[in-house]
Picture 1: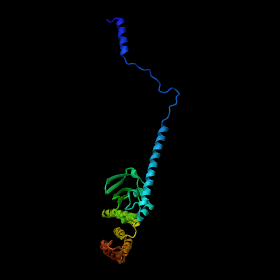
Picture 2: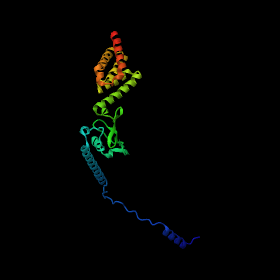
Picture 3: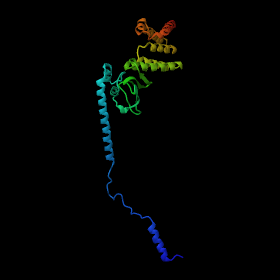
Picture 4: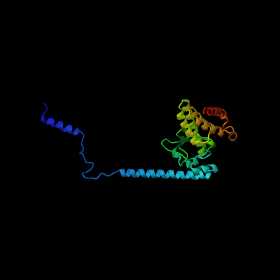
Length: 267
């Protein structure tokens, strides 16, 4: 049996070994106003964003100055229109697209360099959004636009400008129409051909496709008019002016003449 005095000594020793607990102190007093840190955070973010914008503006101005100092007649005209052009320098690409190096992911080096638009960043000129630019020896060799039909590559003067854009879009519509025609969906195919005819007017390849679709849809009068228009577009003067461009349509000329005879007899 433990004596009362010994028990008291044990309790005192246990209390001495126990961790010392500090009294709980209030963080804020009742009625005290808690200082707000959000205003300072917002101000810091605003200043940082402003500094970034000013740096980007300064870089864009330097690129524009360098672009104008090095441009030729063709590239100067393109810069004035806000369009990319073959033969441009890196600085001229930035000036034409209103961008800086931060908007591009650069790959390669030496003679060949590829600039790809960063994900989530819209880079484009007056024509369309730009996906990629390839430079050879510091000059633009080709570039690709993002368009509803997919990527459109510009690698020659004929591919550039409004005319090149129209031809590319019309060609995409013709391919889509041909696939629909092969599937027997001539109404849908005719819709694509009509749209191609609006985008790139007076193209014999579009006219003959429209004529065939109308013929298949048993609309002889409209088909006859289109066959006649096709033959008019393919007159000898036109063929001579176009050189060999439409030589592959010689069989279509024979087809159009034969179908006209059949349609005229069927009236």
